[in-house]
Amino acid sequence: MNTQSCVLAIIIPAYKPTFLRTAILSLINELTLDCKLYIFDDCSPYEIEKIALEFNQHPRIVYKKFETNLGKNDLAAQWNRCIQQTQQEPWIWLFSDDDEVTQGTLTAILEKIKNENQPKLLAMNVMYIDQNGNPKTKILRIPEKETAEEFALKRLNGDRSLFAADHVFSKALFQEVEGFVSYPVGWYSDEVTWHKMAKKTNTPIERVENALLLFRMSGQNISSSLHEVDNKLKAQILAHAYWKSQIISQNCEWKIAMLRWVIRGTEGSKSNIFRNKTLKHLRKLTDSKLQLLVAIACLITLRIKTLISEQLR
Image (cartoon, rainbow, N blue to C red; front, side, top):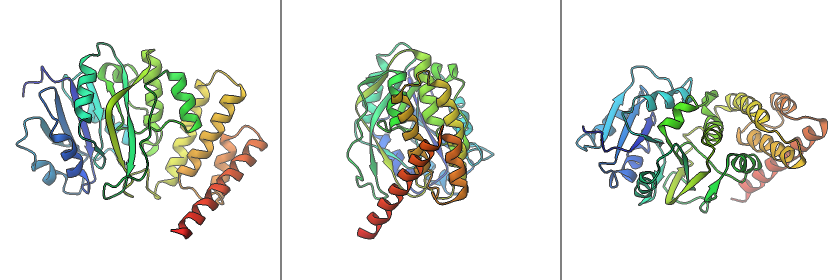
């Protein structure tokens, strides 16, 4: 296959089969000579190859099965392995095996990157969907442009959504930051890596207009899982150390943002606030007894709200 005209490598690190076909179909009608879709099978025991071979006649789709599973122990390492298997494409879009995009998204990305001549990080708006593809939220909009510092403050405050699949980046930039940061189950790996990329380029993260990722809350992905609680807490400890190293200002705004990040991340891990391990975790991430008490009170309140909401359904 001639790769000289390819500007974008779309990568699906595939392990779960349930929504893989849907993910591919959301992209296939906009695949052109400017891009290539790579399906990398992480030595899955499921029917990934069978689904991929349904599209083996498409000239812009490539399937490869790895001999060893890497994602189970180090998801970020699997992402890096997949990217290293691409060819000369200067831009990378790390997609997923259970999300979708709206019509026109791939076309909008291609139009955007054709006009870019320097390493850069791009992002798009997101909407949550359920297992059946029905919207669960309104569109989560991101700024048209944002600096690394703006990104950090918004993210810590909980005002900035992000995933792996809602960003597109230049391969040169990926190489400059030495790939995705490796944290347990890939938790926070994308968040920290996007910030490192934004800092490295010294140019704003730019939104791709008319592009929308549909992030599926399937109950099968790590975001929905209740089986990786301890690994998520370990990852938060590592990501906390990164953010602490990046925050120069110790003013009240940044301290509050950091505490919000701790509370939100602990709640998002699905860890039971009444577990002794959770309390020990919070002690590590808070700077004072007051911060610890505030974090505990907020997490208990969030838990009560969740229980009430479940009872009212």
